[in-house]
Length: 326
Image: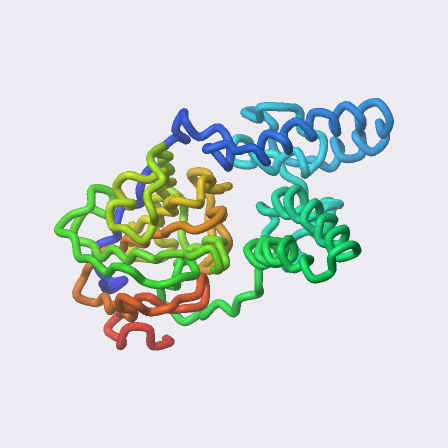
């Protein structure tokens, strides 16, 4: 679509649904442990580190309205950053260094709660029965590997749509109509095994319009019916540039994955390849894009893709070949 055509009306933001009260609406054991520790930590900070609390309060920006608990420092925002506008500048965040770790920040609690006991067991078993140390060492290695967060080189050419997830393409379907997109679409389904990186990324520069959370079953994500039956978070987005195409990214839980993390809220503006959450353990992610004459799909069933790096589709930019730099 040419930029000289009649301007397309921007979409109106939808309110956050009532059933999304956390960035991990499905809850979980590690989630509850973290919340319990947060309550104790806030009590300790207020009683023994009042100076630190006052300093963080002075540096805090935005509003805490909507937060389910008191916000003393950036750690208190981990599970409720989508419920309020409170934030700290990166230079004022004493925990910003965690973003530089080679592990998903959303999985650090699981990594410690599961990893440290497995490491201790590996050392104890290795000390007394060295030939059996591999038994706890294998799951330890898998846990560390699962929560990895490798750097990604994001392609910047105009018109490109990058994969929202690592894994294998299991479906490329053409549907006659999608209510949110407003016309025919192409739906690309990606299966994430337990060995893939499980961070989701945004396919393009965009603005978040609407979020939906649906509880459901935990059918194997390799099966097509998982897209209809399983727990999922639906993310409706609008491209940041004309013609403001509407798209959908949909992380779906699988037979093993029971927790989906999504820190977004309507109105958020994101760049192509930016992290938008994660799915914990094997799962599925769908990308739904408008099917127009200038769309070219670059992947087929069986293709291995990398989130933020693999180009899955591209649009013509003002008469250029799809994906050609301007």
